[in-house]
Image (tube, rainbow, N blue to C red; front, side, top):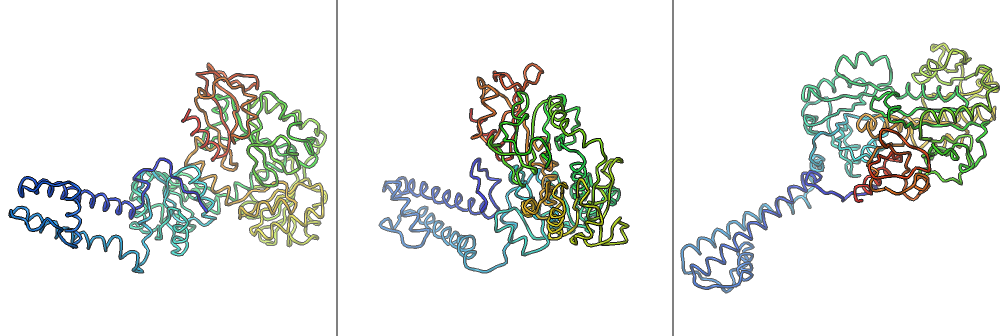
Length: 561
């Protein structure tokens, strides 16, 4: 069940029906109050029978509901008689309105209008079809408190999403009228994942809003130029991106990734802040294997902060110092880039002999992802490709789920296997068979379903990326780029006033795991300080890292201080 956020309730957060009910209740109360005051004045000034305002209120209610007049009748003056007739007629009209607004909708089985459930939209995101796991994307946007409307052509799917509390309507995003229902004219961003319909949707949307920014998902990078011609600002091919990322992971014994801001900022911009967030992948023969987090050289470094860790595909944030580093652990480290480089060299130096010999990588699946992986591999890497389709001209033609096929590809002597097949079931079976053939090979795989990531780790994979999760994070990075550090991870880094935390020492702030977020360092007089002995002072700016939920909790805590 999704949590209902009640903090900061605003009229624009109400649905159309809720706003109608609110207007009805306020109007009814105003009419009754008006008649009560006029009637009370008339009884005293015109009828010369002063009485309590509560007695007048009772008479007005009895008259409006046509249940009687009570002991006040008859009235001697014409004005009071006209007033009573007016109150009666008003009561009849209100009765019909009440039936239409409150009673009839409760009993009649009319088609449900999902538009009534939408909140007021402005500067929001319109999602025109989404062919991946919609729940993963919408949860990502709601986690970041991003306002949106999903236009879903499947009526049952739209109703199911709306019933679950998401801002979804049924409609054809190629139709201008349906996009108008999603307030496309007031939107700031359009996201489309509609395949061959993409061009039509984008052109229709830009007719309604020329200043709209457009992001399109595509299965092939070959369509980017054409999509740019019709007005797409950024086209994303998740399979190609994941293939590239897996290749980068496969060719470095200790993999360290500079986490960009997600909004187009360069490494130089990150260096100006003096803070980087990077990932360190612990491989099977790494010197970190089997070491507790608290005993690792990364944890002992005074200028580096362990932000989080991935264990068997599960993000642990905050990271427990009692956790044991396993071959599939990915550590998320924050601190000065130079310090991280030195730490990386120290760790990888133990294994420098292995780096002197070229790596041998087997790529299973030659679709968009496999082709991108091969392109990303360096020239010094020996690559063997495997695919069932001979038309793709692989080195080995065959079923990757057959042990003989993997043996022919040299899996037993390979340093890494990159699995980019299109079906999750085939990917999991390939991972399991490869692991049974070689205990040493590093297995990096792509899955479509985010829920299959943990299964892939159990099957023997060392590194797993989900197409659904990566796609959702890419959208989050575009929408909320200044706060989402990496579209593939789930970590955010923010700068904030350190005043509410003045007096704390960085070492203590980093070890307070109950908060869910951690302090990476502080900026003071243009200098970034990350030494754990640094005491936070008034006027400092602090760098805080954590998950989306943890950062929101931090912002609330800082705002309340």
